[in-house]
Length: 61
Image (cartoon, rainbow, N blue to C red; front, side, top):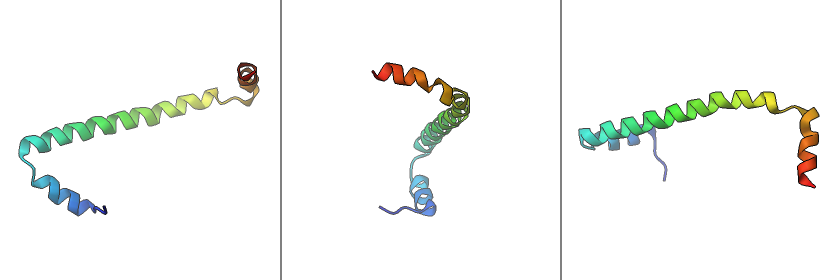
């Protein structure tokens, strides 16, 4: 399946208004979650300390 943005837009505009509004809500929620996840990833970089890898080695044994 190869959908362009224009094809998707045309398909969406064929839906009833209530379904379009529901779709907008679901897309907005998904985008918010993705943005929160992207922002959270930056906080995990602090934990990527090679000196602390010794703890990983201890748990593997």
